[in-house]
Image 1: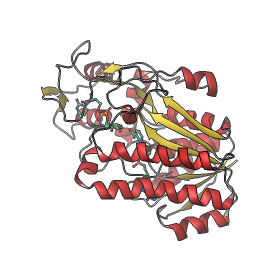
Image 2: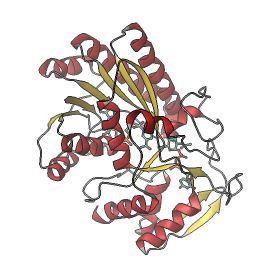
Image 3: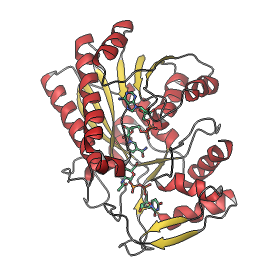
Length: 329
Ligand code: NAD
Ligand code: UD1
């Protein structure tokens, strides 16, 4: 298949491009490099020893998107491009609502114009809000605490309505849990600008001595050790989930949780990271972070039954590969 990967120079998009190329698909990446580097494109080629086409364009730019669609005959689109920093979305809501929802609408519009029928969208477990765990795809979505989360809910609704109005349009809404780790080569991975917001990149920077200590946001949650519980998933498993979703896509809207189904606490992750990598991660316990929930983990039975996909890599591999990437940067 010929697949347009938006945001393919980013963290999840680059790993998915590797898996797509290795599965024999043709990959065309469009990315404006607002949160990524051009070197990643070469790294994808280096890992796979395959060629790909890259456009440095913004997917909210209709003329640019129209030109890309007219140059190729795509079988499907995987839409990763978007902004993802939760705190920044509270500070600059319009920036987030605009980029994340307009990009979705523009891409859906040009899929319809050019007869591209398969659309895979990067959603997030954040859409479940404070539902009870494990989160199941059939749950009613609850309000998220920030504009970023709302852009995911809105994009899911837009794509659902487009599919309703166009019965041969096939949409897969993939709700990611907490992607961590890196390609085992250490050549691509997560490299956030500035001080990381998410736990794993913060841990790797503390272990490397680039940051002094980890601040653990709360140890008074109703969880086994009091720290927050999340469903961390290796980014390569997540990438493989996209290819499974794409290859099984049929008309209509399909929603899948992509996680491991296992909740890990902050302290458990820190201890495992120290043990696997033989490094120290100094930490202190501080107050809860506003907007955080106690627990988030997936019911993964639907993806297993319908896509034949399950996460294969465990928490130790996630810690090993995250560290390998940090050490190579
Ligand atoms: P990322 O920032 O590494 O990748 C996103 C890429 O999109 C970047 O390369 C950026 O330059 C590009 N981009 C942004 N706006 C663009 C635009 N208008 N036009 C063209 N390119 C644009 O983020 P990621 O972690 O790889 O996330 C990919 C997607 O998955 C995002 O939609 C994100 O919201 C979603 N998601 C991520 C996580 C996570 O924890 N990383 C969790 C759930 C969902
Ligand atoms: C965050 C986002 C969520 C997004 C997800 C994946 C918030 C409120 N939510 O979720 O919308 O979909 O990232 O990108 O930002 N922690 C610490 N110290 C740190 C960092 C994190 O203790 O320095 C804890 C958190 O309290 C949480 C766990 O580690 O319990 C994981 O945090 P994080 O990696 O930010 O992911 P989420 O909170 O799940």
